Every structure is written in C-alpha cells, then in structure tokens.
Amino acid sequence: MKKILLMSLPTILFLASGMVIHANEQNTHSYASKAGVSFYESETGTPPTNPVTPNPNNPLYPMEPDETAPNPGTGGSLSLDYASSFDFGVHKISTKNEVYDAQAQRYFDSSVITPDYVQVSDERGTLAGWVLKLKETSQFHATEETEYDELSGAALSLTKPVVVSNNNSPAPSAQEVINLVPGTEAIIMIANPGQGAGTWITRWGEVSDLHEETQKIGGKDVTKEFSTAITLSVPGATPKDPVNYKTTLMWILSDLPQN
Image 1 (spheres, one colour):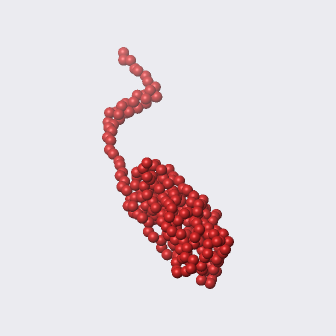
Image 2: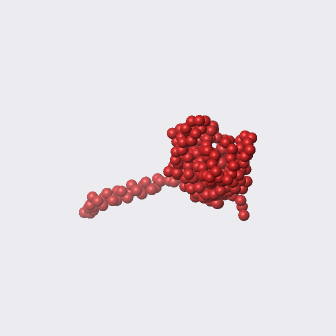
Image 3: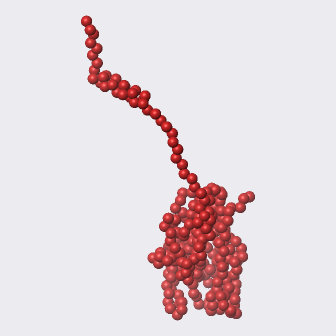
C-alpha cells in the first residue's frame, strides 16, 4: 500500500522558492570595473564675482571710479582676480582734520552697487597656503604741478573685513588695516596650509555701511554711494591746493613663506 505524504500549501511554496533562489545563485556572477577623474591646475584665473553673494559661475564685471574697465587679473593657478580702486570724492579745502569715505564699488551692470573688495583664486590643488598684502607705493601726490605737491600725513584705513566664498574649504583670515604707512606692506588676507582653496573674497563692510553723498563735480551736483569701511584721513594742518591728489596701491599675492 503506497504512503501519501501530505504537505500544506505554505510548505510547498517555501520549498519551491528555495529551489528558485538556489537556481538563481548558481547563475549569479560579479565583475569589477573602474571609474575615475583627473584634474590639472587652472592657469586662467577666475572672473570677478559679486562680493556679497559670490558665485564664480556668475561673473559680475566691476568698473573703475572713472567708469573704465579695470586691469585684468594676474591669471595663473594662484590668481589675484580683482582689487577695487578707491575714490574718496571731491571736497572743499579744509583746515580741520577730516575723514573721507571711499566710493562704493560700481559695475557695468548699473543696478548693482556693493562694498569694495579684493578677490583671490587658488586652483593649485596643493593646499600650500598664500598671503595677500597691500602697499601704498607713495604718499598722495598732486597730478599736476602745484605748490603743495604732497598730501603729507594722509592715511588710508580698511576696516570691517568680511571673508566670503561659495565653497566649503577652510577659510583664510582677513585683517584690518589702520593708517597704512606709505611704502610699508600690510597683510590683507592670509591662508595657512590647508586653507584658502578655490575663490575667496574679502570685502570691506556690508551693504548697510553704504550711504549716499552729493558732491559738486564739474559744477554739477552728483550723487554717489560711499562706504564708511574704507577711509582716508587728512590732517587739517596739511596744506592743500585745489587739484587732484593720487597714489598707487600695489596688491601683492604670494605663496605662504615656508618657515
């Protein structure tokens, strides 16, 4: 007499699924391939960008106070992309100690006005660090022949530095400059090893530090934006002539010195 083995439906399904899994495992194979990407140092520098909301993918082209295009950036894998020029406006001759604000940064896009700034890009990929310095090459001198040629005792100050970027690498640090001495280098930004990769901006002050001033230029009232974060102090005792006084600012970007 034959024995009949009875199994429940769940048991049958379990055994059947085990057979399928075992069959699939016997026909499964693996194989490893590779993926990679390489980089090289940029030699072109980075166009200037907005110092309030920086994004190197969206250039914003600044203009000089005389409404001309600025000098191009230095280029290279460690690049000084842009530095504002400072215009302290037009003022009546004063025998008092005076402090004059610098004109805010203007752009060829006339709808934008920001604090003045300097922009550095480090695309070397070494994380070796860098330092940015500023030197006023000489005291303010008259641009035409006059009796009082030098604005003796005049001193630049750059205050309220704000360091900004759109990348996540460790940030460099910025320093205030109070009463810059002509012919002497002052540190503006410093990136220690491991810091300052990518594009970094130091701007002086916030948009809230900007204010309007109306000045007589060419016999007309002209209103422009100025910033309280960058100033020129001029002693009242310094004799002045009714002429334009200028100086040259040299921005110096270099590798971080190795001690």
